[in-house]
Amino acid sequence: MHSLLPISRSVKLAILASLGLGAAAPAFAGPAPALDCDAASLQLLVSDATVVSATLKNTSTGRSYCRVDGYITTEGPGPTPNQVKFMLSLPTAFASRYYFVGLGGSAGYVPEPPEKLLEQGYAIAGTDAGSPTPGIDWTFAWDRTKALDYAKRGVHLTTEVTQDLTNAFYGVEQRGGKYANRYAGKLGHKYREKLDKHGGKHGDRVYTYMQGCSGGGRMGQVSAMWYPSDFDGIVAAAPGLDTNNQLFFGKIAKRILDNPNAWVSPEQLKQLEALVVQQWDDADGVQDGLIWDHTVVDMDLAALGLFNPDQLETLRLITEGMDDFGQRYPGYSLANPIGWSSFLLGSTPPPWSLNPADGKLPPAAYFIFDSQSRALFGPDYDFTASFDFNDPADVNGWHNTFEQVYSGSGTAHPEDMQRFKRAGGKIIYWHGTADNGISVNGMTQFYDELARQNQGYMRTGKFARLFLVPGVLHCAGGIGPQDVDDHALDALTRWVEKGQAPRQLVANSAPGATPTRSFLLCPYPQTAVFKDRGRGADVNDASSWRCALMPRSKTDTRQQSD
Image (spheres, rainbow, N blue to C red):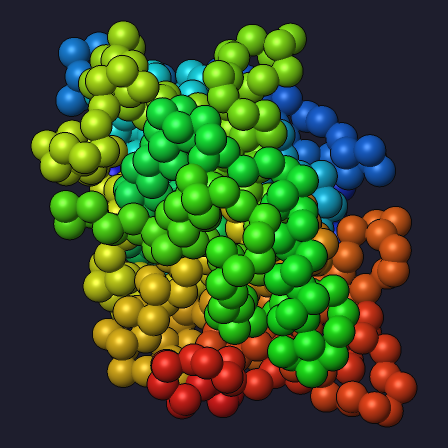
């Protein structure tokens, strides 16, 4: 646990007495800064981190904030130490909210603070998670120290340090929470007098949040399971919950590489999507170009006459999923298959080229499985030549090695959410039904099991809610709403701070989209259905829709009623 350095009371009082205040009084209800934006002074407040710099900056609208950069040195299980870099942005006008930026893919960079949230008074933190490579490059994990940092250690350690610094910067001593008495008896009466004079409040509450999608959602999920007191609330969008998701990527890529005739073109997928929408669009009560409940789609692909037998087998694999030697992963929704080209199949047939200038790049699935395989088995490992999906030793060996290397960050188990629940945490999941990277069916399977373990959806909804979002690809893109994250975070803060659980979300199409549209999003296992059929209502207005239980749902009908 990171804490204040054990320096003497007299030394600490002398340090604090020499510190001035930050910028002007805040526009929010939170406390004013009690310390200057000074790296040397902040360094004295944390023992297990190095504060590299602290710089006063301004947003584009002139809001001032203190940007702190630093790192934590970690050791083991590999032979060499690692540096986990972090940033912390502390606004002069503080709303008593702390926000951690979850990063997708292989992380690998320190994120910039979202200016919109700085404007709203959030203190904002983020980390590279100990990874040196951004994008979808996990080869660094051959160094097992970096692998553990990326898996779970890096986010947790930087969360502790940046929350310590946040509370010290604003002079917050939370009572009854995870920071209770951390500063009590150490800062002295002169420090408290300074807080009283300049607006700080002994006992102020700082609410802590985390938000991310894909790998960023995974960061939130790992935090909830392993470090349940790190955050009061988490938004986990399309989170990576299953090791076999990446194993499935490899199976799809290997099939196409070994049998180029099995590749399905983007034009064929476009035709398929048009036929799917034509047949199933009005299942929600109106034709609006969207399939709201992806579970209703049931088509005989062979009867369409669009695909050769090898292609049909590829499509069956994608939609039915993997079940090999005990390793399982659910298939993808057929509601919006057009997104499969970029993530699963590639825009051009094999042979693929790793040179972008050739215009024949493989799909993301290839890059991810290749990179992870080299992380697990060495930088020279070539899955295209060495891996056999018909060999149980290869399949189970890959799964088991992944679980060992990324300890605590492989397959998520619903029972591991109980400590987060007992700690009073709240989590909002959301997932695009057209997700072309992480199957929405994997998300619903996880949540169904979570509900089973918590005696139904109503009880589960007291701490965890899932919203399915039609037409959205992996994290963003597609024909669905594009600002779900903003509304999910707003809903989460109301839930955590006021006890108002989200009964629905309303999200919007991308700016400039035609037509402009708002979307009603319902807590699973409900879905939106059109309520004004035949009355001239506007399908593009969320108020024309209502939430109803998914008609094909086999789940408990005791949905959230609060």
